[in-house]
Image 1 (tube, rainbow, N blue to C red):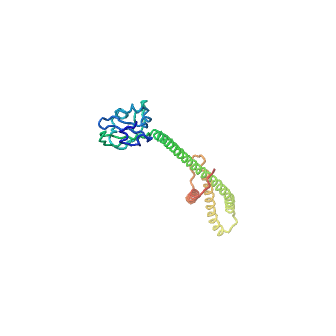
Image 2 (cartoon, rainbow, N blue to C red; image 1 turned 180 degrees about the vertical axis):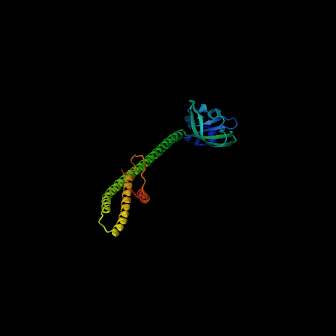
Image 3 (tube, rainbow, N blue to C red; image 1 turned 90 degrees about the vertical axis):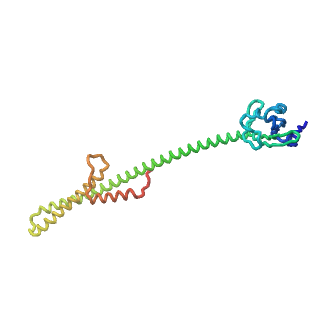
Length: 263
């Protein structure tokens, strides 16, 4: 039998719609009509819905659902006392025969809420995975910087060691002719059969030569000692000023020159 109130308010839509529909008297606040969609949604008989106070149907007694408008996530009480969440459309209708009415169309949003929860869980998992990935990337970047720094230190030490061996080898080869020159100067100073005038000139030259030989020997010894600067010892070798300047310039160019990183 067709409900005259439902027909007056909804027409044929009341019976044919798949959505839940019910009508509430604004004067009494009670449900005066409901369709089978409402019965299926609420797991109740139509007869048990009709006459129920609207406030008993909701889970939020402080929420005013009688005013017209659109309501999201409204919890309605099912027959098994579990909530069902719906989206409500409320419209006021003035009927000369039935008085002031409020027409309700309710659409179940439970499936949407499940999808939203799943999406939120996936978003949280993705955010956590992204945070872990960023943390791992930062750790890898730090480890890479440490490895590169160690490689640079090892490469520099290797270069310094190689240059130290090279300088030591050069100094060693310089010692041989310098020693021979020193020996020659000593033998020449012992020659007596020389004209006095020439001997005075020769002695001045021998003194000058001896000074140069001594200077060369001192510098060579300082170079050899400097190549052992990284070895443990009680003192730090000191180069003559001119050699110290050369060494400083060489080291600066060595450290600033491009080098192939060691594996």
